[in-house]
Length: 464
Image (cartoon, rainbow, N blue to C red; front, side):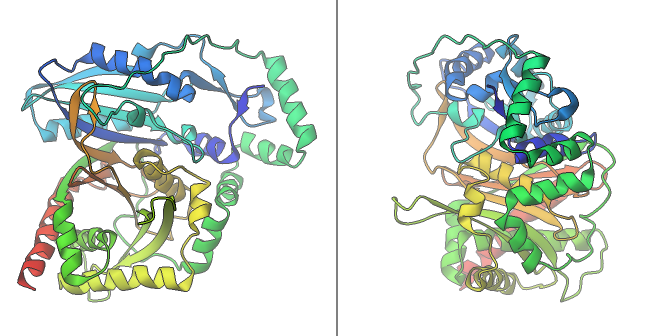
């Protein structure tokens, strides 16, 4: 019997519409080795690693009448060259051109008749570089053991590890009769699901959102009890198209650690404080009324590695009011640290095990987790999502090419104009800002302000 999508995964298919694509992405920049790094090498690498992510050869098939959730079935026409694509910038390609391309690619929905992922090799970048852009539908990222194609293509050495490539033979696609028979069997075993599936088939928005809340369980309960409506903000607007803008900011992890050492708190607190300063300046640049009490509420799923290597990974998510009305950068940091500490001490934070059940720990899957949570919660609860995921602090390679930077692309929730993903890697901290094309025409300005806000905090650390 084919694997059936979980209620949560199916809900992301139902929630997707023409203005809200439900895929999470990433932009990795590589330095070409002397041996080269081209399209054929990338295709060969991914073909070798596909056995590690069998879901990437499967597509979604709906049950006739939608009496049950869709199932995953092998795609008999799977063609890796359809999913791994080639693009190029006019030489010498610069960051602005790359970011414009990322925005265009992320604006396009994935083809639901095929496996729900795409990878683009972008050639023509300056300084002998190439970029790899990944897109994966959130319905594919399910469970603690989930892997994303961008993870399995990377190695810790310039010499790729050897994979035993198993001969893949697709299982026959089930007939409509078989799909119905399997669905009836599931209904007999779990009769309560029939009502849920009928509601989903009708695309009842209220029922669908309730389903997502139920799937998150403890997550939704914690937010309902802890949160009050978010303050009004230009970040909450009606989104009328899938078109996006993308910009990036960079920082050094050692700088954030220096700020933390000087003023206390955590590296996560420093990231949120830097974003608070940037958002403050952005609001002022737009002529918004900013007073001492002005705040912007961020939903911030955070992953934290314990010092004990055997303790695994703790994952927590918070709603935190960023003090954008405070002009002093050190006071902003203290406000953020106090707010985060209060969350932990009050028990109003989301339980780590509840989030781990939703998504596994890895940079791509945790960024997807944040996007999932944002999609399921009312836009009145927060203004912006910030996913901050610590990555490996050693260099990684794809087919011998060293990855120099990696920027997350977090999808927008409905009626949210901005999503910010943050990933640390090999001593750097990389901010990816994904914004609605109409509402965030100045997203590049905000990205510049993020870097300026980090520099402002560094100045206070040097002076202390």
